[in-house]
Image 1 (cartoon, rainbow, N blue to C red):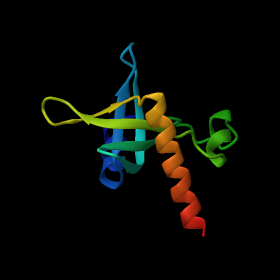
Image 2 (image 1 turned 45 degrees about the vertical axis):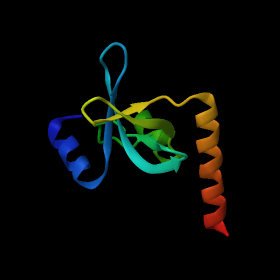
Image 3 (image 1 turned 90 degrees about the vertical axis):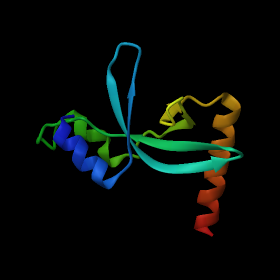
Image 4 (image 1 turned 90 degrees about the horizontal axis):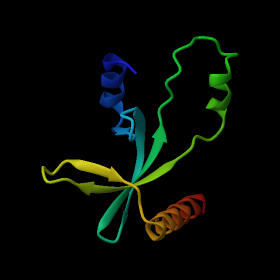
Length: 108
């Protein structure tokens, strides 16, 4: 994803950039923040990186499906910057349950 595309996305949505151990960057859109206790958890949706215009390309096949959603705990570093971390199993289950309750309540 080039800088111009990233700037356009950042104007509209909260964009989270995460790196793996090898330095590869992955881009996510913060869909929602769920407060749970004294912590906040973000629901992150991957931003596709396909740049082809061919609608028949296999990279477009999953666009009609529900996207994968990742849960990350939002902490702060020594500079006050947000840091997105993997939740514990207990935190993950609690956030998932809270989200499911929110969805069920909105459907009523």
